[in-house]
Image 1 (cartoon, rainbow, N blue to C red):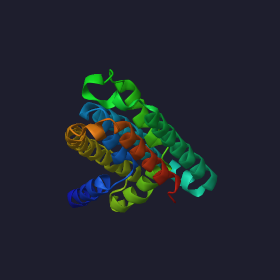
Image 2 (image 1 turned 45 degrees about the vertical axis):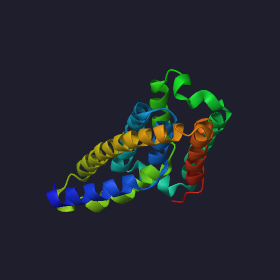
Image 3 (image 1 turned 90 degrees about the vertical axis):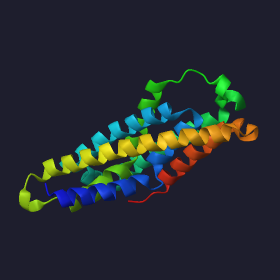
Image 4 (image 1 turned 135 degrees about the horizontal axis):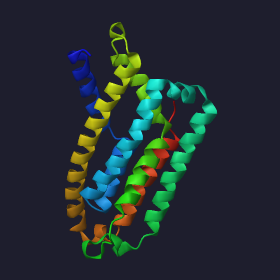
Length: 207
């Protein structure tokens, strides 16, 4: 593959990953409410979900979802409902559940599964790859599917690196927030609000 083309793709990928979207907001929510490890585990789940989307885009499955308004709507609203359910759970948590001395053992396996499920229930991700990857494919070199898979892997790796960095920064923000007793007692509201925002963002998204 052309080196210049790959580097251009990498630059675009990093910028797009840093844009406020469902995935990065989900990582921030988990890192603020728990710690950076929770954010990183969530990021691993999200990136595992990307494997499915990359494969779907490379094989043309994403095109089927795009052409089917019903399939797109079903996946979209299922994802939004799931996130709003997580938000509702957060709002129900006790005020002291996020205090450092009261933190319960973290269920990292559950966070990993949530990351995968949230990513898979966002049809915009598949459509995103369907629209982005072909623009950086060199048709003269052939092996179109292979090129799209390679580009997808590059995107996945940089996304994981960005999410890890965001998790570390978000944990520092967590400590700042917990230093304020008023905010510390309402961290469940902060997390729930972020999750609700993500759910609403997906629900009102268009193709």
